[in-house]
Length: 428
Ligand SMILES: NC(=O)C1=CN([C@@H]2O[C@H](COP(=O)(O)OP(=O)(O)OC[C@H]3O[C@@H](n4cnc5c(N)ncnc54)[C@H](OP(=O)(O)O)[C@@H]3O)[C@@H](O)[C@H]2O)C=CC1
Ligand SMILES: CC(=O)C(=O)O
Ligand SMILES: [Mg+2]
Image (cartoon, rainbow, N blue to C red; front, top):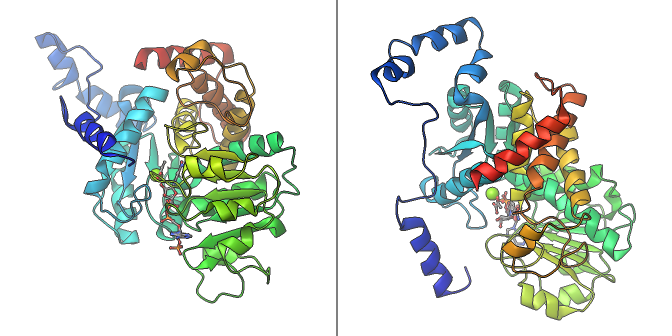
């Protein structure tokens, strides 16, 4: 948080009117005694009995198919660390609000007071029948990897840890477009990822899928370069460790590098380090709320820098908000049983492509800009872009169907895209 005004304004925003950011609204009339009999006893027994006969009817007679749980245990809330389940609630309500506003998905925030992996997994499994999808949020590494893997394995609805995959997807789009602007190829790019936790590991894996050469990748954690010479690495870090002998620190790794991607801690990238990077360096300082280097310091460090943060108040917001609402929208609409790599890559490519299209007037108006076009200050679409839902969710639904994880077909793609556009209008 930058200043006292912002602090006070943010606290007032959350406290005024009905406290918090999210509420539940009914979707059926309850105006007469007859409505009452349909909505509640005796009428409500009928859909219950249909669901007993056919569990998929839960999608037809209840809100399940449009309902996502945003679940945390509060162990890695933004970059604030292990602040606990309750203190993480404003972030989870925020994610729920973004699901609704950007993708017309209803979301419940659920804060689970359980840091033990078994207890957390059992709790989420026990409440899963309520939901069409589960968005895990702000759970620290390495526990998050086992938690997500077990829930994906054991549940038949999409489960995604947003800090891992939402962040990777959007970082992938920024990487592709940033390198294109710098005139560099991904196969030759030298990339340093600072952080080796939830976001970093998934980003590294996705970058490798996009064509990054593993020889050109170095991860750093709080102790320095994640190297095969270290003996304190967890198994996930071991898989991504470099065998380079010449790098021990972040400063070593950055010399001559084309890309810095930070998902770590505030203020640890210095202008001096940026100056040692290759020409037109892509610097994605994504720690929230305070990035690894400030916008002002980064822009002053060298004229050829291409720079992004995770924040809304500077150009180039690389934030998982550009992925998770649309990924779940597309997955829910085809009753996908999971979110797979094909669906994630579809989002990366759809976002990267959309940034090259002309920007609609209403986006310019929202940001008070006269013009905006693909380039150093506009690597990826703006979160308020009304085209995102139709473009990205359609790409996800198509990828789910083509990769065989959909349980419902889409007959008319134009009608589907138009229905998505209407959904955005209705939630604003
Ligand atoms: N812009 C976006 O969309 C997103 C941004 N983020 C941000 O990324 C950050 C990390 O989140 P997440 O991956 O979920 O958290 P995790 O707790 O899973 O991982 C944090 C990682 O950062 C490393 N780290 C901490 N301090 C330093 C340091 N001084 N130097 C180098 N590495 C350090 C930790 O090292 P070690 O392993 O040694 O403990 C760990 O590997 C947060 O600030 C979060 O807000 C996350 C998701 C999305
Ligand atoms: C954006 C987000 O999910 C985070 O900073 O944790
Ligand atoms: Mg998060």
